[in-house]
Length: 226
Image (cartoon, rainbow, N blue to C red; front, top):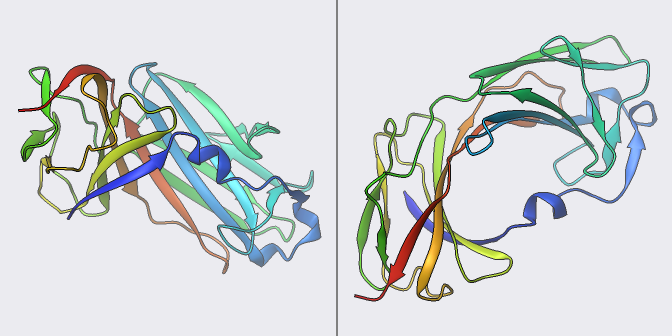
């Protein structure tokens, strides 16, 4: 299914609550977890992120007690006080990262989060037509089960970035339809693809989520009216 959205460039920041608690203050079985492995091809670097929250995705952010632990590829997880999450940097691209979280009750949750496939903007894409139906393929394999692809268009807006989302298995491109890019002005814009893979997760009864996230390099193109 091909869907069109408007999102905010700062959404990943505002998703995080400004409150923080230590994990010993909550029921260990009510700790919700969010695992991410994010590869940025423009920087050729990978970020391994874990966010702990109380009860659900909108709960209070948690910092682990000194008696619990998080290992990222057998290295201690590094806590980021600004974003209220754990984040370890890895040079270059990796296909998977191993996480091992041990709570205060000595329960161990071992998970491997995988980036399933890569993706890139086609080299011959130089023009996008704002008011016409246009098919834009990507370089990379078709969508597999559990994957979603975004085509993100970064132009004249300060915060809002239009993106087109598709999750239909076996598809290898997105359709731009009339009026979908209405917020953008004609002229130069940057385009990139993002590929998400929803991994299975071992966690507490509170649940959680785990994504492999591949972000392609940006490409400068012309947005024109036919």
